[in-house]
Length: 364
Image 1 (spheres, rainbow, N blue to C red):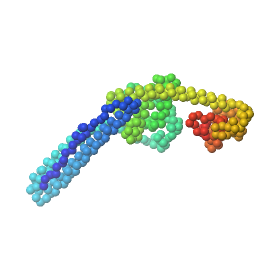
Image 2: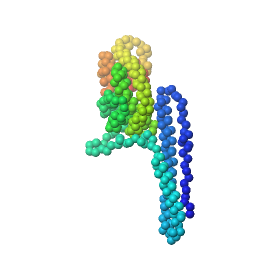
Image 3: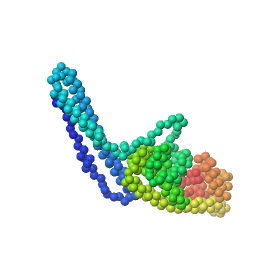
């Protein structure tokens, strides 16, 4: 009998992997290129290691097959006559084992595989108490529950490196959610609008890290909690950290520009609110003097008739010009009643909704 042999594996196809160097000046190009490059490298790595694992498995299978054959030949009646074949099988196994050892030594780990998992915790005692989980909360509930902690995070100084920030999110992994990212964005936006640019930059450190982890999690199809260790592990690479700093500065610049626009929007909204207040103080008697067909509102309703049909509390709010009093009363009504009254006020012209505002939900 002849010992079975193993065919070699050709890995050269991975040596000729080509990546495009075309530049895209779109603001998100760096994210796209980095994610695409990471995906291509990861797929190449996974395919190569899959082939390596298959080769090792095939070699070990052949070793076991030869060992069974050696045992059969050694225990047979003609064991002495089979010594040459047994020696040949043992020599083949020695070669196969040497190949297995070489393949295992050459196994490579990508950045994500190399990151030590320091993020897993074992909880005991009171910490085991069931929780709804931050991921299951809507934004308002999340902000109410973790707002104070996020406010503290916004002013926390993590220094120039990322190790301390990585440790912070490891110990506070409940903040690794898109709600936290949104909260930090708004926090930084309002700090800039108030003229606190230094505070905005500090808060943006954590805010941009959360955004980057969201992007990294989406690209790798994993949760933010699972993606965070790999993300902070990458920050140990000086080149990655240098490129990340450039993107962080771009993020800060966009925050500054958005703060200017949002301040203008809020000033315009305040002016519109003042206009509404003036409209509430309109002269009802002047309306009554107009012919009915001339005073109909945009929805075809008569403002005089609608006003007289409103609850006394709403009439009093109109006469006093108090938007707050009107809002408080409407918000205390059952939803269907509130929608009914507000829709009639809009259709009669007594109330002018903001652009895009649903007439029946005004003041809600």
